[in-house]
Amino acid sequence: MTTKYIFVTGGVVSGLGKGISAASLGRLLKSRGYKVTSQKLDPYINVDPGTMSPYQHGEVFVTDDGLEADLDLGHYERFIDENLHTYSNLTTGRVYWNVINKERDGKYLGETVQVIPHVTDEIKNFVIQAGRHAQADFVITEIGGTTGDIESLPFLESIRQVPLEVGRENCVFMHVTYIPYLSGSNEYKSKPTQHSVKDLQSHGINPDIIIARCDEEIPQSVLNKISLFCNVSPQSVIQNRTLESLYEVPLMLEEQHLADLVCSKLGLEPRQPDLEEWRELVDTIHHPQDTVRIALVGKYVQLHDAYLSVAEALSHAGFANEARVEIDWVDSEELETADLDEVFGNVDGIILPGGFGGRGIEGMIRVANYARQKRIPYLGICLGMQIAAISFARHVLGYEDANSYEFDPASRHTVIDFMEDQKNEIRKGGTMRLGAYPCSVRPGTRLHECYGRELVDERHRHRYEFNNIYRSEFENAGMLISGTSPDKTLVEAVELTDHPFYVGVQYHPEFLSRPNRAHPLFKGLVKASITRKHENAAVK
Image (cartoon, rainbow, N blue to C red; front, side, top):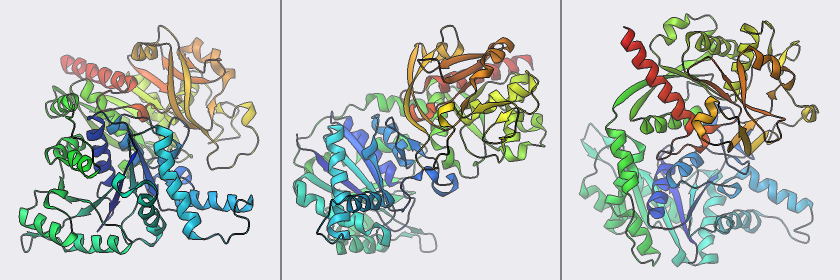
């Protein structure tokens, strides 16, 4: 079939959950047998979010092919259960980077390079190429920011032009807006939505569907007013209410026939969805058999979105173990002098995710040693694996100055270091080990017990590696090298041999976790944490 394009814009305020609306629609279309891919167009001038502080934009999501992308791509992958790609995230910075490089290469000789058509063509071609690359029936494109933002104008102009290329009959425009509730007058207000739609119309885009974000059900009279003033049918005004779990959203939108509406507008015959697995998932979420508390120790915990995929992967592991995972957000910087018994006295497991820079590192090292000594289930991800190695080198091998070259280049025992071919100075942007790489899993290890396989592919985002000269010392002292690159040159995973669950991995397993298919390592951590909880309760 001809590829169909769905464009999702936002109005009134940012942070409405456009990504969740788009991802939920993707799930509904996939449940009808369609091949779906998604993309996010971000108006900031950074080439990618890779060099941003997590406090600016939350986590950096990484795809199989090494794209550093907006965190919304994580939502898309988790909902549509498809691996995204280099055509899934585009920023203003990357657009201008591409256009300027083409100009320098002489691709526009004789032309005055302008926003229209050169910049808009770059964006337009990117959108169309996403469908071709993924061989998708549907491309769902989210435009970052809100209508009216000056930096979003080239993106709006570009998506206005796409129907001229592919046919208006192959495009649907979906506008997500906020419907505020005024408690003083006890009423919902549609005027901000009206203004937002008029602004969108001023750019030549008439929305086909309006998604009304709200906390409680909106009266029909308000929905009718939105329909009338925004020039859409009453059936095309869809409520997206705040729910207990974001994984309920597809079912709520299905009840309002969103996917059927989209298909109808695109001239497609109606198909029955297969949502049985998703309904079972939501039922499991609502009826946990147990509760487990996991401490997430990091340096960016003030913004939970900095660890969004980790938090979601913990939830997924909870679903798989029929348990609700409660997260204690622990700032590692505060742990350098804290009483760890007080901080972790009520937790059942500890996870230490990725990060960069020296702030809070000594607190993390204390935590890794504490988890080892107290036999608390521990999963270290990327930096968390490196911290486990540093802690082991200090407290078991006796190398008091053990460290990473990143934190202390003068250390005599850099158990984490550059590889030989990395020694030359490296630019900051996009130069790390990025994307999916194979990991050979050692049989008879905890890692192998979790995966059940001897070869896995996992996504990476790091610059430093375990220093190979220390391998034998670590193994002789009880920290096993349980995962390596297939050629054995890079250490991918370590674990303690005399611990219920103490695993560190150089990669980011959270990026491959799905709500209906939890990642094996997160499942292992949560399972071990539940076991510890019950064992401690039995002792008491």
